[in-house]
Length: 179
Image 1 (cartoon, rainbow, N blue to C red):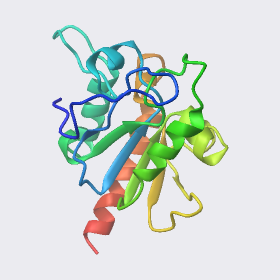
Image 2: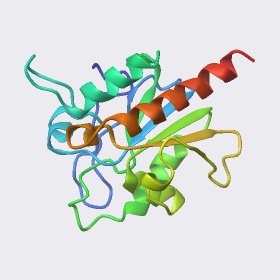
Image 3: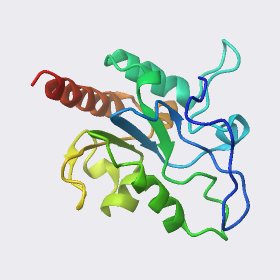
């Protein structure tokens, strides 16, 4: 997917590592927040990696497929990671990245939190306790927050929890559109 947000990568002010910019539609009312970039994401400079060969599948492909399944096109959302570089960078303060991500909540109506480290950082609970549920975050009363597993977990476990969360997220978006 082409990154329509920005192609210029910045460096972390704390450790100097290249950051992963959000991708997608910066004016979107919908924000999807993943955990942190992995190896392929760092290479591509995107929050989620996509297949380079027809025989492979990466986390971005699962994300795109599940969004499409519930009627949401990838290019209509803004996607970011809670942390903009790998968490193995010990000299960085995760709060710095958390603050940058929270700023992206402004002007959104729906936010999907994807993964246990995201929900734990923002809610203090793991996603397995709230997967597929709408949650509240103090200070953001006008935003519908939904919780799902990280799409990459579909490589290791059944996809049911992920699908349930995406269906509920999409259903909430559609119900608000029809009002």
